[in-house]
Image (cartoon, rainbow, N blue to C red; front, side, top):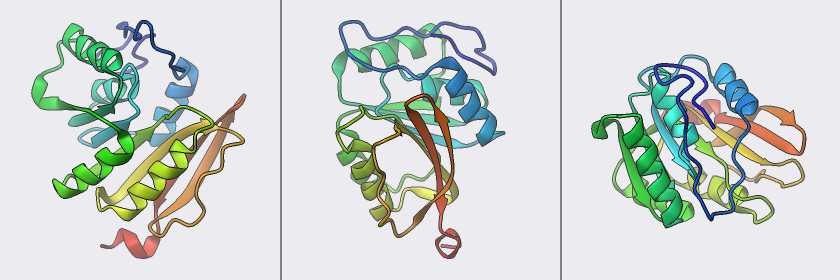
Length: 189
């Protein structure tokens, strides 16, 4: 896998060995960043990080900071190695070794705010739906935040969200990428 754009463009990203993950195809990742547009200066949260490709891509494209959340130790080591190999300064990222569903609450308690949240959990386990419910109940999204969820096209996301609303969707084979924004009445808070 490689970085698609920005200052680390064309640099390779290692994948975790001995771990069953489903990496996002380069064309899908590129399409997501094209839809997001300029992310310079944004603070990014990469949930279910795997290799860290989303957060690294965001840093390459000018994000000020990426927070990676991953519970598999081999994946965490791969993220650390990828960041080290690219010589990304440690003040531009943080890594949380833990469960993404619970990490959202810890970030809320710490008063963290994110402009872009990437979520690419394993399919068929309701992880995307449950994590969205947790995100919806916490206050970690900035006023104009975007949440990007990559999920299986048949996996339903929660329709009972109070602060988030689906903005657009893109289909790539069996993968659906859903972009969510804050409800207009919640964007002012």
